[in-house]
Amino acid sequence: MKVDIIDYESCSAAGINLSALRNSLRQHQSGLIKNNIPGSDLDTWIGAVGDIASVSDLGAWQSRNNALAALGYEQGTIKSTVAGLIGKYGAARIGLVMGSSTSSIDRTEEAYTRLTNENALTDAFKQPFVHNPHAPALFAAHLTGIKGPSLTINTACSSSAKVFATGARWLETGIVDAVLVGGVDTLCLSVLHGFNSLQLLSANPCKPFDQHRDGINLGEASGFAVLQRAGDNDNGRGIRLAGYGESSDAYHMSHPHPEGLGARLSMTQALERANLAPSDIDYINLHGTSSRANDLIEGKLISELFPDSVSCSSTKAWMGHTLGAAGITEAIIAMDTLHTHVIPGSKNLETLDEALSFPIKATDEHKVCHHVMTNSFGFGGNNCTLLFSRAE
Image 1 (cartoon, rainbow, N blue to C red):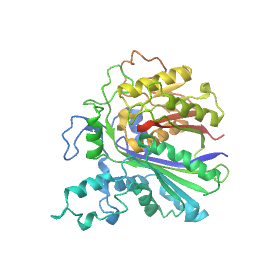
Image 2: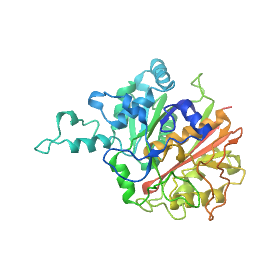
Image 3: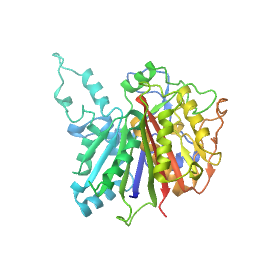
Image 4: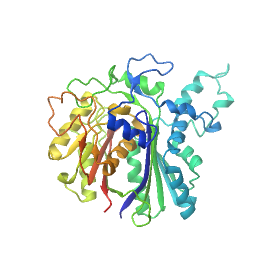
């Protein structure tokens, strides 16, 4: 069964919406700033979304994570597209799949700083639907009016890539007639200091795949896409989810398998599901976190699996590694090249890691793409690869 992407929208430090993101990519203007998160003195760069402050009152749903989800949902035409589908099929026939890594732990952190003298939660923080791993989908259902099946996927950095695969399966089995998929993650102390404890943060703007890279920058983002069976829509974007691959190598809690066995499997699965050869792929948006190990393993896999005709880049230097929102953010960047005909360069790349040799460029490339791929590799060996094609 064929699945079309009929709408999509992104919100990150690189742009509050898709139009702004396109401008940032075109101008090579990064959204990274020096860390200014209250309560954190870590020397690093972050991709913070300043516009979150405009979403000030969510009542019982209040959290930074939910505010960023709400901000992203107001951008572009996503909201009206979902409303139209609810009108067409009914709210119970629309599915909802959200990806996140932290859910609303930012709100839980704040709650613990404001306990009563008896160490109990104050009334403002008694939010069972917020202090909850399923918070992103619970809030999105409240926000959108969707009443069909809902799911929150928490598989670290692959979370909001896997939402596409789940949504496609729901459509294939007839559970729903359309699916809103999304991802959201926000900066908080647990994230920043947790990654710092793993000695993964860089004091400099990140440099994916560069010989002199020394760590990652963290960011926050939200993104949404609408999936529908091919042939069931007349307002599509001309983009098809052609294939996907999912794997879990479970090698280590945070370190990828040294030979990238799971990552290799997710890429080959996506190609097989799409019935495409490696040489058919025009562009790969790499996971490319700028860590020493991840970039080295992914880069070697790309050189082994794909010919030099395949263009590659990492776009994390624009908004940082947005963790549970990285999958959908980079899926949108990848699929959008099918419209813009511009492959973004790998920002901050000056000297390619001397141990690597594959077609990655620092500068943009103008190219009419037909098939594009994006990789998302998470902690615990949770891997997902998505493949998008022109819907001819």
